[in-house]
Length: 287
Image (cartoon, one colour):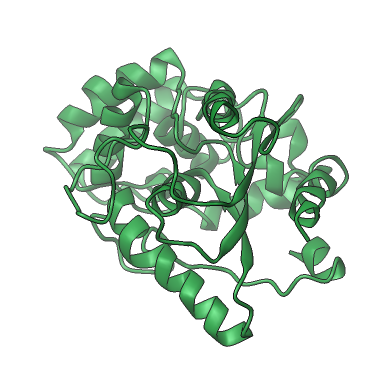
């Protein structure tokens, strides 16, 4: 955020329904795409009196924002910088197995997964998950970090490389992960199986096949990925870039960063040197 401000940007942060600052709720990407992102964009436009804005989106903020964009619900956005995954979720084989079998079974035990169970497991289901994590994850001494890796990927760890995090950041993440809706994981299982995002609620605002027609947006899209991502493989962004490039040659862009994973693209101790300049350059291209 500091880098953006220093470069002259007026920065706004959207706290959508998946935020851990809000009460846990059974959210889906469809709900965020129809209700959250379009309204957030409208609000920023109204408050700033600027009819064109740019967006940096990450992970499920990215997938849900892409659903909004391709449906034509965010026409004010002229540039989208997306990290990790957008239209084509591709995950490691272990994650496919966990989504297909683990989540389908676990949904009968709980409505949420919660990395905080590494610190306090209040139910039988939570204790069971914590036991599995303790038996399988030995990559560090941070219980939340290990639960995050078990919940969101197939790595040890999954969302970052430990060498990219400062000790302070590694400790800080203990408070930055909480309940995540099982409804999301079920939607992601369907999407991974289909090889593209799959809307699941039949909302008329969204296309039921996201690739059936060209995206209803003129935004230029810059896709970012960490080469070592064990949550969503970099192939996710590569496939989306190939799709977008086939529709509008040499308009969109792709960046794959060696030595980076998923969230360390933002949280890494050297991200301000290695990643942020490329993001700012992409934002500035259409200025």
